Image 1: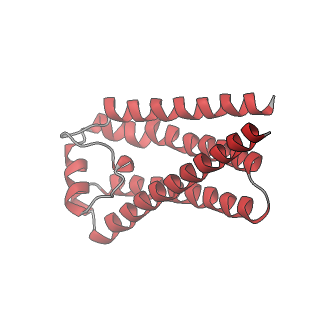
Image 2: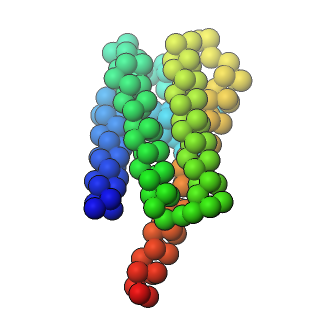
Length: 167
């Protein structure tokens, strides 16, 4: 029974991600560029400035309003799903390490959101190299930690499936 609920929670997290990405792609794409949050390899001052210059006032309001709100709820939902999967499939020190990885992901994502919000508030003319580099670092860290968590979840899931098949 718990497994069924966990699958539904994971499905909800996947749908929430699809909705968030779809919203960003539909309403926040500016000058052919996607949101800063979605750039796996980060961004530099010129890229951040170019994106902010291309945003119109309506997009800026959406980024700081609806998108930011959704991007606050989604990481918590994803973190909950990952924690519950890790709780189900691991124990001891491994569980602790994976729990810490999820906490690091959540911290990186929320810090990135705060820093990108600050970049938008500063506007393209007042951006500094340091402010952009810091936000970009947290964007990259978020994606790297999340990739590690998904990789661990995949490996643990495969291990659990193999153990079931052996029984």
